[in-house]
Image 1 (tube, protein in one colour):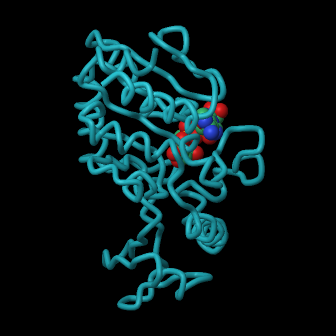
Image 2 (image 1 turned 45 degrees about the vertical axis):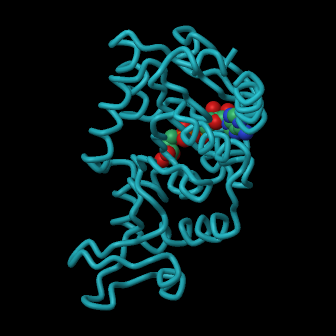
Length: 241
Ligand code: APR
C-alpha cells in the first residue's frame, strides 16, 4: 500500500518529527513517556525561558547533547535515505535537531527547527560546534564577548529560519504526496504544511504510532513503528522493481 502510494504519487516529500528518532533511543516530546512529561517546555525550550534562566536551559540541552552524542540513525532514517536515492522521495523536511537524517545519507534535508550541532552568540554572532560547546558547559559563553551562547534550535516564541520554512512550504505545496513520519502535527507552522499539500490537490500518508489531527484527511494512515513500516516499504519497492 505505502510503496504503491509513493510510486504513484510523485513528487513525494517526507515530513518527519521526533517519532522517527525514538528507535535511535531519543525520546519524543508528546508520547506518554516523552520529554514534556518530565520538563516544562516553557521553562527549558522557550526564548523567554532562555532569557530568564539560561543556565536552566543549558542544563536541559547538555542532557540532550549527551543523548544525541551516542545516537545512531535507525531503519526509518535509512529507509528515507534509500527512498531519496531511488528518486522516490524528493526531500526530507524535519522538525528534529538531531542530524540523524544526514547521518543516514539523506542529502536534501530541511531542518525547520534548527540544529543542536551548533550554538551561537546572540550579541556578536560567533558560532561554536558541538565539541567546543561541551567544553564550555555548564554555561557556554562567547569567547569573544562573554555573552551566553544560545543553542541553534528554534525555541517556542521564536520565528523559524525563513529560508527553511519557505522552502518547506514550497515543497509541501508542490508535493503530490506528503509522507508524514513520526509527528503529532500539533506545532505550528509545521502543522500547517499538510494543509498546503491538500489545498493544492496533493495527498497525505501518515506513519505514526498515535492518531494525528490529519488522520481523517489522509489517503493512508499506518499506526505503528516508523522503522518497521518504512523498511517494509523499501523491501516492497525493491521486490517489485
Ligand atoms: N514510530 C512511529 N511513530 C512514533 C514512534 C515510532 N517509533 N515513536 C513516537 N512516535 C509518534 C508519537 O506517537 C507521536 O505522535 O511520533 C509522534 C511524535 O510527536 P511529538 O513528540 O509531538 O514530536 P514532534 O511532532 O516532532 O514535535 C514537534 O514540538 O516540542 C516541539 O520543537 C519540538 O520539533 C518538536 C515539535
